[in-house]
Amino acid sequence: MKDQKILHLINKEKTRQREYVELIASENYVSADVLEAVGSILTNKYAEGYPNARYYGGCEFIDQIEQLAIDRLKKIFNAKFANVQSHSGSQANQGAYMALLNPGDKIMGMSLTSGGHLTHGFKVSSSGQFYQAQAYEVDPKTHELNYETILAQALKFKPKLIICGASAYSRIIDWGEFRKIADKVGAYLLADVAHIAGLIVADQHPNPLDFGVDVVTSTTHKTLRGPRGGIILTNNEELAKKIDKAVFPGIQGGPLEHVIAAKAIAFGEADTKEFNQYIENVCLNAGAFANEFINLGAKVITNGTDNHLFLVDVKTSYDITGQRAEDLLLRANIVVNKNTIPFDKLSPSIASGVRFGTPAMTTMGWNQDDFIKLTVIIDKIFKTNDNKFADLQKGQVKEIGKKYHE
Ligand code: DSN
Image: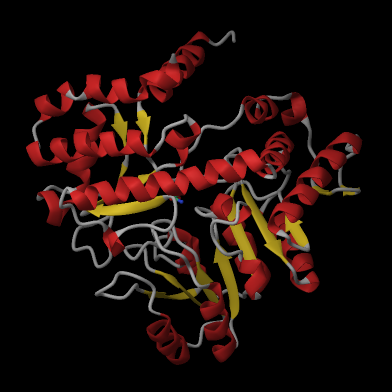
């Protein structure tokens, strides 16, 4: 690379990614093939439109690449229709909303503090500004979804769209219950499976398409372990046509075909026994990780996890904020994100919780034993709440991951 400034920074980031323990639940390490496709000459090509119906010449090979991505995605999700052009998960949601709604329509999604996403109707997001949004919460006692109270709220609010799916919810989502609620109020149902897409593909979480969910959106870079990007799926032909129109030309121009090629590769990788085993390990590791926190006396939201992530209430458990916890762990080469917990009194920029996830370190080969050892160190760091002590834990943290770097 000729640009020495950028090269220098990329190399610094490469070292950071190798030396830090990555526990951000939405991050992962992609394969060399995915990386190669993202950095390929496909980035040179404009291809507005869809395979065999483009607004630019010379799309012969691009068409085949995008069609492969579509076909592979349909196969792994057992879906009838797929759009692979969304640049991100947020744009997948934006595209799906444009296909299903008119400005001003009512939508209902999970609140940010209960574990929902900004694009599920939060006030600062376009989803909260273009549509009349009302948030549902998790149950105040169990912190799990309470389908009865969501139904009662939906009957009152009468949304045109109900959004299910989350960014920080550690339990199985019952798509069937959501379908019943949507049917009772005559609403469309959208499942945003960005976090659990890999689990669905590997049969570790039910597939919303098996329960009649109208539209499924996702990112491709979390548990699915592909490049950064978005996708939209449906089994409804009419909706599929509307979705294609909404994505292009509705909200996007030229698709990122280098990213679409990388998506195709990741979908192929996800269609293997090795990927199923990987996802099983991701979930086993998360279970062991959460249980060790509980054994050490910490408060884990919902008292455990069914998936790849969980939240620790660090305010109640250790009398520190999520921000302080994040800062302390960074000193020990551990990367997490502070996260609000259900009914959090602190703002998202300080937060009372930390979100822990296992997808990235499981890709690096970590097992349950490694996560248990790490929990003991994290627990001590939080209990001690001292910068110097946190700094000193770096060596022990490195020791756990050492065998995977040799
Ligand atoms: N999806 C969010 C996360 O879980 O990190 C980012 O938007």
